[in-house]
Amino acid sequence: MTIEAFVFDAYGTLYDVHSVSQLTEEEFPGRGDLITQIWRLKQLEYTWLRSQMQVYRDFWEVSEESLVYTLKAIGLSTDKVVVNRILDKYLHLDPYPDCLSALDALKGYPLAILSNGNQEILDKLVKNTGLDTRLQSVISVDKVKTFKPHPTAYELVEQTLGIKPENVMFVSSNSFDATAAKNFGFQVAWIERVTPEALAAEVASQEVVGPSTMFKLLRMQLENFGMEPDHRLTSLSDLASLIK
Amino acid sequence: MTIEAFVFDAYGTLYDVHSVSQLTEEEFPGRGDLITQIWRLKQLEYTWLRSQMQVYRDFWEVSEESLVYTLKAIGLSTDKVVVNRILDKYLHLDPYPDCLSALDALKGYPLAILSNGNQEILDKLVKNTGLDTRLQSVISVDKVKTFKPHPTAYELVEQTLGIKPENVMFVSSNSFDATAAKNFGFQVAWIERVTPEALAAEVASQEVVGPSTMFKLLRMQLENFGMEPDHRLTSLSDLASLIK
Image (cartoon, rainbow over all chains, first blue to last red; front, side):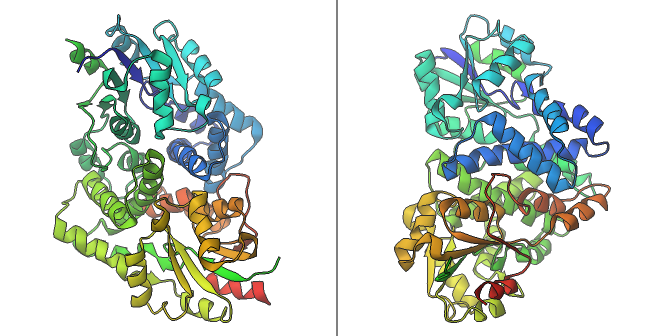
């Protein structure tokens, strides 16, 4: 099937959401990693729960709600200044090391983001990290007030780019997103950052399975919905092989 | 507000979902607890994701999918006989120690279950554990092919019992469920099995925060949606105090 455009998930795919851990570690020494792992798990939970409850809030608000939940649960201060300082990092997340070169290798194709983030924070993040010159569109689900994996969110791609789902290569490292995108009708490349073998070895090496491994166990393996992505790639750089 | 009926969540509220861990430990020595914690986290995730994707499967199927995911992720065998043996425990989960006496203390009120479980497995579980003689209704969301916290699921209570939401005391220890039920319009008693103080102390006592504590951090604290249950009780036995 022809590829007419590449559409990327943002958080966790182009941007490392755990790059916030340096900051959380500074604010809460010894708990930085625990905070970022639980926060990210709850942040996505909150998008799903709010969609289900039919009480939408945008991604920035959901991120704040889930961060405050996280700090409270661990028994830490939820001082507003500190919360805002951590949240602000979402405007300056680190792109994965292979992000810029991988996008450059796809030059000539329309490239876009489809993200749960609201437009304002996505635009700032993309600009702050130099991706604005490389992307044709930054599409936010906020326009339809529902989060991925609802089909309405994925429909925004055709509405914005005018390209049919079957001609879009959708790229995500979020397993639920890759699976749901396949179910929706996109071609899908899942960026598999942790192979089953590597994860099994990581689990076997630990006496007590810690938060970072729990995150990988919970969110970084292929979901078992009976829908398989077309491609399993270990790095964004491998996308270039799909257009050769 | 008058209470005309008590409606209970089943899994995690009346029944201890982690009572499956003895069996998972027998099948996979050293990994029993890790399996049950991840399985329960993914089981609920899968209900939310499938609802969002609009590809419904019943709770038994979702439970199997999430169990197989869990075993694969940890790097364990997904032999069908073993999977079925573990799944079968969902027909014989242990009621919490305070469950039967707490229900008996509410005698005279209509008592019901509203659960994500499908009718067949709920009916078996309730019968196997002697709750059938105590409950007026066992309501399954399967009738409307969507899971809690979707409002359509909660609407089944009035449709079945003929009692308005504001006159129902909805009881759940699942924080998302208690919060969403409040948002829907029920009176709500949240069974808070782990207080913030106890959890903070548990976290502080661990060098590496393990799976069981991660579960409590992720699912057993009050969700931060700006909706508070009417009552926070530490045990089902405390429900009797609401009718005095």
